[in-house]
Length: 371
Image 1 (tube, rainbow, N blue to C red):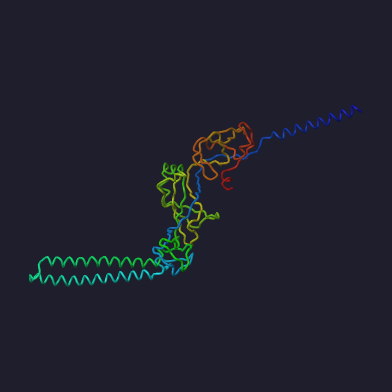
Image 2 (tube, rainbow, N blue to C red; image 1 turned 60 degrees about the horizontal axis):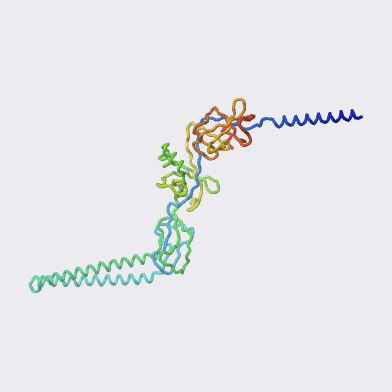
């Protein structure tokens, strides 16, 4: 009986041992990983930049004279034409000032007339040698003084007319009215903000380029090519603005805080969809001939150096360093260190070590770019 029990126990141990051994074999299988065959090809690089949208013209309208706001002739969001009256201030005081200035000018003209008559009289008497030449000089001086007073009075009248014109606030150009903070009857101080007018038939879109990218453009001769280049605008909701724009210019200085320089692109805005102060992304496209691109997720860094895992002919992996030229979205443009003969691990690099063996599953760059 004991012999039978012992035999059964040995059988169980044998089967258990076989099971453990089989599981160990199962766990030691080489992992199957996606592998990318590198290839040189002409590539279009798409790069997006955070952008701010500004109106072609955006001007604050402020009161140039103090007074009560008598009429508000427009509403917020209204389209206005150049020269259109938007606000009217009470003008009674300014009309009085203009009347006083006009009266002073009339008085000055009367003095001129009197001085001219006196000059003619004195000139006649001097010719008859009834009066001396000094009397003639005095008459001429009186006429000159009368003319000077008239010129001063005319300037005061013009000044009064200008101040009266300040009571009518007009649109400086065709545009859209923004918020109107003051209502009819409000007491307006000189310099008070009445509203803002925006001309958005065209908008200026500003985006910043890093110093590294700027230097790359300069050294490769692409900076001048950027001016006039067609660009696309991605709106805040992720949609593409239907009208392409053009890069017009760039600023002359780098921003100290960000180390970047601003470019300006111009976009048509016929439907008035784009508003002053909105945001979006500018999408630039550049052609790079014979480029070698690798996915960003294939790259890992050790002590500020960039590496990928390369698959050898016997399916073992080894680390290989390379020098990146620049990063574009989810890809890295290779400057040196890799060739089109290399096959690299696409993803899963954190789970393998140098010398590990893998089962490669080949994928193409077209598949990745279509993800």
